[in-house]
Image (cartoon, rainbow, N blue to C red):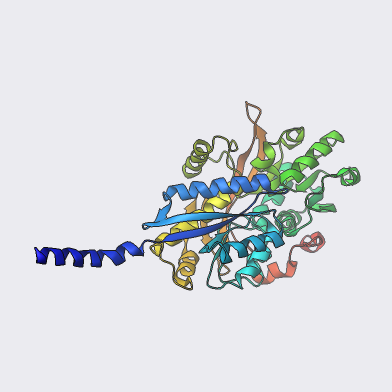
Length: 415
């Protein structure tokens, strides 16, 4: 009896450390809950939750918890929330942010917390990973310039639109997404007649709409969220009827499902980005079905924000799985696992370059109206393995300059 009791106690002593090894992995999630990108933020959270569901909320017995850091898409708010998540909530790492300027701010914040990790979810400014990148900052989706690549040559060669005016958001992502379009457009022989820039949350676009030139084949619109909806409604009310070329977030489901006359202007609009709503790939179709069944109150098809949050979260969970859910004190094992990841996301193959920036597929699409009156982006073409330098050497790409109001210079690209 005594021997049996001793054996039992010894067995419990052996089992106790193993049981104690199971810990909680705590994730901080950044998503806008105020401002122009509130709806994109909400759909980003849906994508995040969809990826978590695939792992039933745990990795190797370690429970996953998450805390929301609500932002308003401004850099200052994003950093404040990130700091709160790290310092007060005690999260192990951060997934986020969504908007371009937020990403630049989070890249710099990442350098102050080298023993933590930030995995970008949807922010698309070029400089975030291209200029002085942080070794603990990862982006598992193409940036805004990559998203714009292929659209310019498509509208020149397939639509015959060679003279355009452009209207884009006056901040880092607006410059970056426009740059991808403009580089491709100008190299294909296109001419940008005039450029207009809109501050986020402008509301009243009457003066710019009145100033748009008439002697162009199309207008490139690079705005998103409520800005896109407001601009399109005001453009329709003003009697605008020029062909439209959509920047990536201009034709997202967050805009296509909006009420008002906006949809009348969008049918037939070509665009480019990280997905096509009706792509016939089985993995994409399965992902869309999962989204629709899990979130019947969501959009008819997942927005690009849902897809990017999903892909970033899936990559994060795959890396955690590789290390058995056990983070080194300085998270070096987690950083190594993230850096080496190469996988098939629902919207194509993803691998990282030396700056921990995704190389991926870009889809050329056009907006069509379904039998039920809903709008979606129909697949036209796909460009695989688009890197951050848009297929150029570093010397060629750097010679163009960083994206801005004046860069790229069309004359230099199409002498």
